[in-house]
Length: 92
Length: 193
Image (cartoon, rainbow over the protein chains, first blue to last red):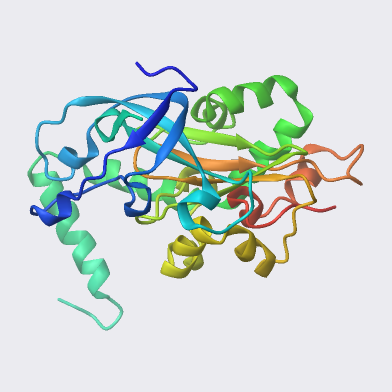
């Protein structure tokens, strides 16, 4: 399990280009680097649940991103916090 | 026979209810119970939780660690729903909730989402230009307040616990809950006395 404070990178992946899918990782955050705030629990992968497929149970994290650096605008210190599953996170 | 008073949605509901019963997925009474729970959900439920949190430190602590349990303690049915997370505003931090992918919303405690919550404009601007969006709501954060936009993606539902406004000293739970609006618990606005 990832400890709070761990720096992570969201996978820069586009499953949408490979066929039908149900992705819960917003487009704008793919490839971005953030910091794990806390573990939110373990949940069946919604990407499989959406198709009634057997779903692996995944760790879910609240991950904080620097808001201005995502868009190149905004107020320093502001943040975007997103729930992301372990399969979308890799070491930064 | 279809009458003029029956709508397509009534017919659809009756047909699906019958099918779910025949396939033993859900009984008509289970469906009726769920409809009643959905209809009873409104921002007044969340407002009751906020007002109690302002008065009762133990309840506040429970709400922040386990929103679902806190809601159940207020008699709000949460069975089968995603966990409720509660985001605490403080003098130096303000939260704004959005679901950029769709319309995840804590319906059990806030009811149906307002139309704008589901709009493409709100969903895009809440993450890209959150302070501009707040300004259009007439919400200006004092200097030194950091903004945290919480993008809800699937497994949690989030509500904001706003700060108790000045001028409410000595108010009881009913008085306090009356000033808490839907937008205050999404984070687009801030309650005032």
